[in-house]
Amino acid sequence: MSRIARGLCVATMSYCLMAAAPSLAEEFALSPQAPPEQPTLTPQTFTLAAARAIAPIADTASGAQDEMEAEAPASDFTFSGNVALATQYRFRGVNLSGSELALQGGFDVVHASGFYAGTWASTLDNDTVGYGSLELDLYGGWSGPLSEGLTADVGFIAYTYPDAPAGNFDYYEVFANLAFTLGPAATTVGVNYDPKQDGLDFGGLTRDNLYIYTDVGIGIPDTPVTINAHLGYTDGSLTFTNNSKSWDWSIGASVPLVGPLTASVAYIDAEADVATGAFNPTSSAVVGILSATF
Image (cartoon, rainbow, N blue to C red; front, side, top):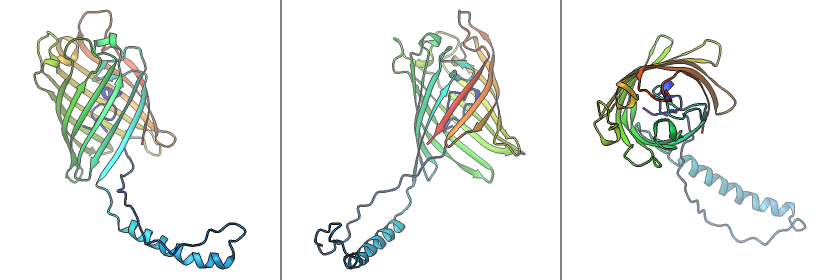
């Protein structure tokens, strides 16, 4: 999954993954043979005759450089980045930033073969679920077409919390999803699985986690607006509920703004038997995000 921004990921997670970006061009050191040394010319001594004498040399050097640049092979790697400001950070329906704004961003590199790697980070509220104030994710995988109109994405994600309190909160998961079109709707269905590991041992019923979801996006004709919907089911440690099960869903819209900017808003909710406490991390909310890719 490329996690495009897990800020609304939750709301519209999984595809998170990841936007258009400039290609990396290989650098070539051009060293054409230097022309015969010319006398230093000042505005007073630079005559029309001198200009005509130098012009052929400049044209030849420029032509040689253009030819070498034209022959330079295109890079097989594409680099991109993204930044976002979210009113909340929601992960599969769970509020990880409390009432705080979340600053998010990441970098990705994609090879022409379809293999990719990247990193993504978000600020957190330390008092919400106890992960500390920062999440840093590392991920990699492969994405590509299986047939006409059908694309697959498989890979892994490592979730790390550098300043978490005492204890092991880091964990990893593997994922796979399929993307296709159903009529006017761009559809994704996927599954993420976290094997049993210490980072998911919260003293509850299980130490692993399964997440199944679908995302649907439909563009409104003759407008730049896209309507997005998400439905997910979690069974495992990452629900923060009494029975380790929950449903999360969202409905929202996104619209491109000026240049690389995109604005999105979504209503997010989760249905679960929430563990008792002063704070309910699965309560419903309207979340807005202003994001940019480069």
